[in-house]
Image (tube, rainbow, N blue to C red; front, side, top):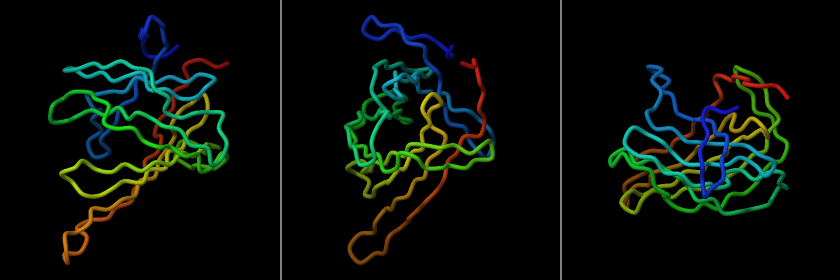
Length: 176
């Protein structure tokens, strides 16, 4: 059983809520993604917040999948300024590894690794390369991000970054 059930196009889905947590103060975001796993992969079912809800089923991580295989993924995003959900763009996702280890404080996981590149909005220069680590029947257990915001003309780059996010808590709701 998931956290909630949602109906999309007349089909009832068992969904889990996925939120971000501020590592400094432990606050959980007010906006949450609805996600689900099935035999075809990991799905985004929409997003909910106190000010907006958007439902739609999109394939986030396809599996089974072969290394090198690509597919298109509409990216659901929450606009913090407007406090609204939207489909920001469509990303080309590539399976870069079909059996890689990702180690966290919680556990070590054998994962499928997906890569995509996000280009920032028209008024912001830069890009983000993301590597997401997924386990079938669990979902995302970690990610690595890297990117840059280039300078203008002869001004050097203002910022480059790289960080790791990992699963910090796993709760088994039912065992099969």
